[in-house]
Length: 242
View (cartoon, rainbow, N blue to C red):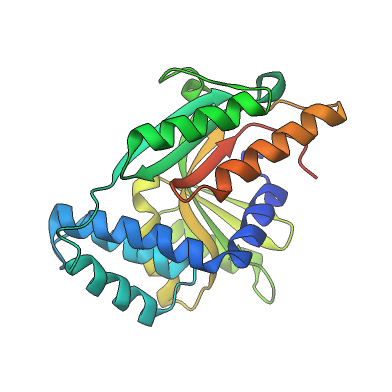
């Protein structure tokens, strides 16, 4: 694989997620509510709901929490209506950034995201301004401790994975973005545990930041975006995170 996923970036994201469990549950709860409203409460006939439940399990959300989220979603028909909006922009020195959001107030979210870019030496762009620099891929990370590399690779490819790579402390499995939940289900049945499993925007090229001010601004931009409740995921092509 061509090094399209940086393990230190994923580890940074995982550490933030571990420190903010309540926020992770809130985000997945919103996705469950959207899926239930769009296609009903039965994951056997609602493919989107099935995908979200698979994502919740892959990200270590307990079954009890998933059940509570589903019950809340069923009773939320008169609640907020969320929509998915993707923002594209440039951070300091031209770092490309893609921001996935789930919001019930697009004006509020757009204002917040624009403010974060402006405050940190970047600018929010139009649709398509940076997306051409990314490819949508499914990425599954399996903790490599105690596992045989050849066995994991064979099981992953047999399940339909497109590629396999060894990272520091983990095996990375690349898939079609629409196949993440199915492949996870097959691997889970064989006893595998996941660090993460999701569709990502993978950059085709990377941008380095050399001066301390740009690095500080880029870190602050990422922190501000990730702390916003409307933001689901942030993808970028910065190559030198510490």
